[in-house]
Image (cartoon, rainbow, N blue to C red; front, side, top):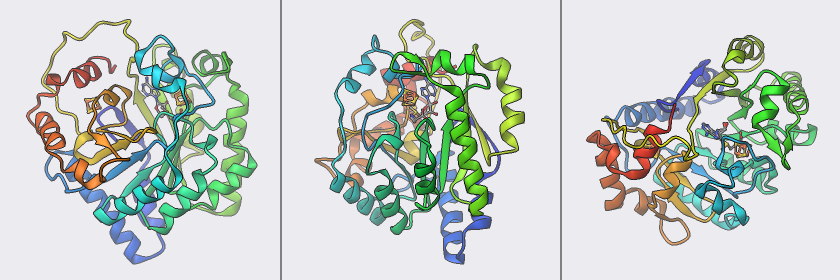
Length: 330
Ligand SMILES: C[S@@+](CC[C@H](N)C(=O)[O-])C[C@H]1O[C@@H](n2cnc3c(N)ncnc32)[C@H](O)[C@@H]1O
Ligand code: SF4
Ligand code: SF4
């Protein structure tokens, strides 16, 4: 979705080819057009094209590379208490988002969406409102048969499963559950069962992606990962590692840089805070709070416009959090 990611597999063509009505196909084509021109900085809309909604801040894992699994990291503090967006608030956000022109919704940020008992109601409502894209990102640990069935019948358009490994050893060194290595075999079994159920039901949606954060520890598994999963899923998403720890002080490497996320996206945290991107370092950039302000007003505020302009001027380093983000992304 950004310069930090590479997706192998054309998920958008597959979506367009398989949408049922001509109207839905046209809307999706228009959404992708809007997305392309905003993300290449040429036409910023009066609304964010994509919205991340962190329905709560809870996760059943504590991965070593994620702020949730980094108790020594100041970004971790917010996860010490569980926060949830009010259920009616989520419905209100979806209604406003639809009204102002938002095309794509993701019901996850720094959390595990399958732990939230309202998730499927939210997805169904977003589907009823006919957003072009409805997505979640999940660690697949709770992808049991019951959840698999619900996902297949929910109206979800895309789902990404984060794996980052092709062996139990590599997986369990980085992905922890209750301070113990998470069970790789369980995750893979869940995912293969889900894919089998999807095949049997002859459903195209949700489009399935698996993701792989490229790290020193797993890079030797990248090829095998590709060989195995490319035959089974619709796309593979390679991500760059963002080093959220302070171990590498690299903040003096200022460089000319513009980030495209603030051109098309807003992210709502579980406490209502609104941020310009899905990267945890961007959580320190406060653009407003959805419990007090309208989405449209936050997006069109002087503060947001100034932030976008700073990026358009290739001055991302002028914001200390963006500077850190640039210098901590591999
Ligand atoms: C924060 S997770 C939330 C969803 C879910 N819990 C999961 O792990 O899939 C969303 C995505 O961010 C990725 N991620 C987490 N920490 C990262 C880091 N330090 N650098 C790059 N990507 C990261 C995860 O691998 C996942 O694909
Ligand atoms: S499963 Fe996702 S949200 Fe949870 S700790 Fe790991 S990367 Fe973070
Ligand atoms: S922190 Fe700044 S540079 Fe990093 S993704 Fe967010 S907006 Fe872009």
